[in-house]
Amino acid sequence: MKKHMFLTTIVLVGLFLFAFVPSVFAETVPNPIVTGPVAVTAAPGDTSHDYVYFTPMEDLSAYGYVEEEFFIEGLANRYDTTSGTDGTIISSDHTYRTRIVVRRPKNNRRFNGVVILEWQNVSAGYELDAHWAPSWKHFMQKGYAWVGVSAQRVGVHGNDINAVDNGLVDWSPTRYGTLDVTDGGTVTDDSLCYDIYSQAAQAVKSPIGIDPMGGLEVEIIIAAGASQSASRLSTYHNSIHPLHEIFDGYYLLVGGAGLRTDLNVKVFQYLSETDLSMIFGGPFRRMADSDHFKSWEVTGTGHSSYVSSVYRDPIVIREFGEEPWPPECSNPPYSRARGQFVIDIQYDHLVRWIKDDIAPPTAPKILFSDSYPPEMMRDEFGIAIGGIRLPDVDVPIALNTGVNFPITDPNIGPYNPFCVLYGTYLPFEDSLLGELYPSHGRYVRKVVESALANRKAGYITKKAFWQFIFEAAHSDIGKKKSKWKKKNRKSHR
Image 1 (cartoon, rainbow, N blue to C red):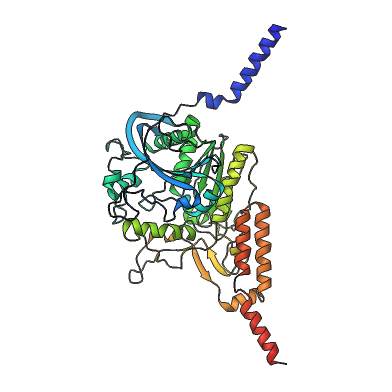
Image 2 (image 1 turned 60 degrees about the vertical axis):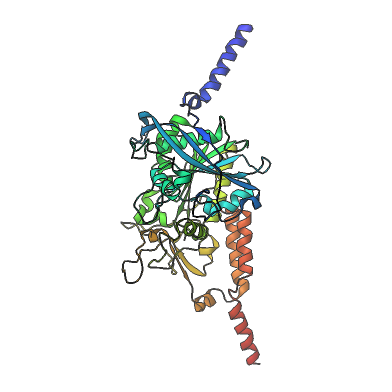
């Protein structure tokens, strides 16, 4: 009997270990040395720049949140990530020192246990809070913590993309002069960024010494990146995740491609209409949904969103004294289709997927023709067909698309290569609005139907649902014609 119980115990222990083989054999990520919080000695906008770069214009304390900046330093590996499978170490013991920015609830009661660890985007030549910008209100409403990681050379050391001192070191030598992600200039290919990112996650998830999270109990940590950073995370997912397994899930915003399919970690992707234009690969860039990967495509949205521009532009002007990339384009930027409402709920879906294994709903794809090259199919207004259709495109009062182009005539305006990312917004003429919505009630009813369909499908939050309805009810759409009809009826009596 005792022998039988002993064998049973051995079998059960063996099954338990087998279930967690990846974690048992994954490399241990070293904890970096954490310093901070780094003191802020000047108000945002002060010429000394001795404050947190890109600190929000809003007072986060009014929402029960705190922003703190920390320096992290240690020794990082360089990895060969070119195979698309598990990465291999090229060389080790490269010194680095960089920063992380933490925006978190002040106390544990407000914290939902989830950290969004954003790989800061540097495509514009300076660091952007690409995930924070459209969703900061949702993060604070739901109790998320956001951590931005400066992992790449451009963000820390700058480059010659534009005329401003765009790297952290140049922007504030006093505050950031000791930062270095190149091992003293000996590593110039960004190959340290993956280990830096892993160690930043380790400092947040399992702190030793100074805790950047201020004692908050972190349950889930999600790797997040937008555009170029989403591409970096695609490489990280394929080559570094199997080695470290430090992240519980991935969120790829307006980017990411070529994910390997033999990993079980959950990945959620958001693609704007721009991301499916032929400039970026069209429908060929798509990855198939699976039990560990979901992708949503949002019709009418631009790669770079209007809501992010509204958030970002005042900060950029404050930090640089000017806007490095003015928005003049061939068509009026930006699309006003509010993809941020979809982005917000994707975080919530991903957390539930990770915690409870409840997969997000599948979403329809934007339609393309059968011709070669395939063309995005559009209706009579120029609005793309298919995809997630928010009331902004489902009950249109303007043309919202993901398409735009730079101005090529120097006599008209400055050349801005980022125009291809902005999308277009062209309000409908009053005559067309009158034909589409002969009464205000009809317009509101259509918006309610569209918003309700999106809410039931799980594509928008409850808050977004009510915002669509509130805005429609308080709009003037359909009212002018209704007044005109009443006036004419009186004149004919």
